[in-house]
Image (cartoon, rainbow, N blue to C red; front, side, top):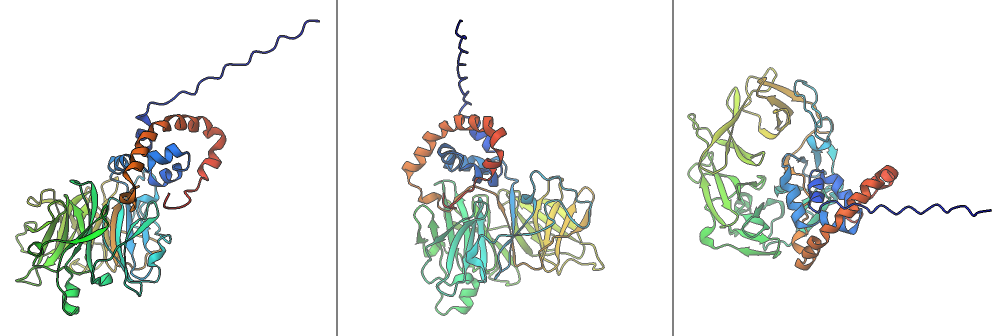
Amino acid sequence: MEAPTPTPTPTPTPTPELPEDIIPDILKRLPVKSLVRFRCVSKSWHSLITSSSFIHTHLHFKKSRSLILLARYCETLLSIGPQQQHQPDFNITTTTAVDGFQKAVELDSFVLVKNLPYYVKGHCDGLICVVIKDGGDGALVLWNPSIRQYKRLPLPRNFHSTREVFGLGFDSTIGDYKVVRAPSSYCQMKIKDYHPQVEVLTLGSNTWRKIPDEDTPPFCIEHFFQATNANGALYWLVAANDDPFHCEILRFDLAKEKFKVVPSPPDTFHRNVSWLGTLEGSLCAIHTQRLSYVDVWTSKDDETWTKLITIPRMPGPEASVRHSDYVPLCFTSSGAVVIGIKLEGFVTYHPIENKVSKLAVQGVEHWLQETVCAESLVSPYAADEPAAARQHQMRSAHTASRSLWQLILGLKHGVANYFSCSSGDPRQ
């Protein structure tokens, strides 16, 4: 009897490899929350996602990803807005809720501020600059809420905690972030022998250096004002020396480290500027509110101002908005602008319909400051990373293509285990 012919062993099909440039192109389109999980897929994925080149690409690929933070002084921060949804389709015709804004989320992972006074001083590329009054010398912290990382910065000399004025921006000429300490109005009035001066900390050096006295501006800034980061500079509202009831726009060039006063938006009524901030990355300003509407102006060159939008008064029996502080927060995908009104809540305004609607947000009873920052992978520890490690990340990034293909082939059998992957230590 003949022996059965053995079944030939099939030749394994080689695992195809994706082109190297496809991996970053796929991953850069994903939200930070997903990328934080993907870091634990493999060492090569971790190297790719934490590399400075990928972080920069992801940050600038889609600037519309935003976090809207509400600081509550002695309570943890709240988060509201479109980051709660993936690609939301906002419908602003409702007067009760807008998708993504129905409920505030408590950011309880930032434990340093719990039960302590604190102020948000500025933000840039997803990094938040926070000063905390902790009962001791105080703390100056950089925090990225998207990846849940924070770093304590060294304190400057004669540090006065939350009464200080700081700003945070990116100097593209050196490729590094700078924290700027500016003169404080509160310290000038309350601190004996206070000497206004400007100091700069570059994250790469992690040390404070004083700029020349002749470059110190003849203005002091209110400590509760956040610095506005735009156009390669930091901006603050300051009281004019000849008229304390009139505000000037003070600009600090991050590369040249020089101050100058920027002309205010044109106004035939000679109204004051009551708010300074950004919308979609552009410098914006609001004049003191009139009886029936609010004008929002924008500038990209510090010289030319263009009227971006005119917001009518909010609904209700009151015929005036002059006693309310309107703070434009962001645009929705349908073109509506979300506005915070201090002591009153939130509204949306759609210019096409010329309609203002109250916005119901659960879990928000009060807040002190609003901060709209980018969702990003930027780590406050990025400047601490040795150059050799950054080069190794770039060399090892190409090995991620095989990992991605294997991941795709294995998704059918491993979805549950894959998505249960934890990010572990926030420093990783």
